[in-house]
Image (cartoon, rainbow over all chains, first blue to last red; front, side, top):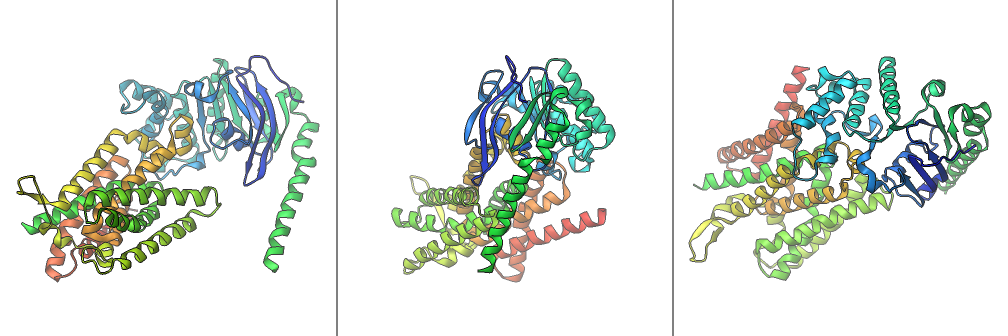
Length: 263
Length: 279
């Protein structure tokens, strides 16, 4: 069940990515409608984060292409915002909350220019939207997991993008933060922004997302939640042949390893 | 007057190292500084062979090229060879350093270049190695002039590209996502580390320069929560190490560079204790 759309916000064609000659994404072909609030769902190691990284050109593709609003990433970079996994940075870094949020404005500043008053105002406004305005001077190492995630979201909000990619924004955050973040994403989507979220909590998929991508190395399904989020397709994503294949692959790998140790 | 020139030389080295070292620590690449400071050795010797003298400009070029090559090889073995970063660093710099050792011993008869001067340097000779203008009047010690030039370059680099350095150091994937070429900034920084290392080696030597790259920056990292403060504090610690180190060596009648690094180690210990007590 892969539904293609006309005039998509995101279009991926024949995308294959491999790490160390082992494919992690295989022949992905999909399109996402503009203004959708979309979840990427799949088991651990299914390539969810890799898919976003490939779209952002952070990992090399073996084949295929990605188009955003019918253009290449370089042509629309200022309209695209990326929120990496919270764990991907060192939160002991000597920086304040405001320093980090201001980074969202760097893309529009260019070389040799420092952030101005207007940039600072935009950063403070974004902090207010995520309910962190009181923490602007706080050092980032003093933040809780939920607060760190809010800061990352605030940084993305300052970019005023048309499409947002978020990598596991709900992992390790408290219930209040999850609710607040979801509300902000919902509002962005209402304003016509396209939101694509890597997500792993199956229980909240139906209330959160209107469009779902089911992924496990290859694309299992992409379409409106009601049509895609079905037991049969979930079975195919989580419990079907592909999981078995991955397990067999792991066993073969282990076998090789032992054989080498015995020598 | 000699004391002034020696302390000034030490301070110039220490501040240059502290500024770059701060970024190395935050990028978790302290050992890359170690690697570069050793692997520039063949570059220095080859430049000496080509230029036929200790003309410092050729030394800087030769070492600069080797420094970039080292960085490139480390990245190459890590990315393409699937080797862990630390193993990749270990293989690369020891091999290049060994190559340098062979080259140095090959020219062992030459009084101007030997292992001792490269590994340990001799800051006490700085005041007598003068640079002259076209009329033959002394302008000042050669090391001071070269090191001032290097420091101005580093200051300009950090001042002009502070935000790029900040963002590529803190969050490299976000930096590339907004269109910055992170590897270009990586190599620019490493190029400066090579330049500083080689400009410093005559005065403090290739081994102690590693300490000055890490210790003042690590001390500042412990006690600050702002990158700008960290840069200023680490520079201050560098100058303090140079100043107190000189007088320590005067008292003990020992190696000046050794005393400077010893003091920087003490400063680190003090910072560590302060942080522990505060907690």
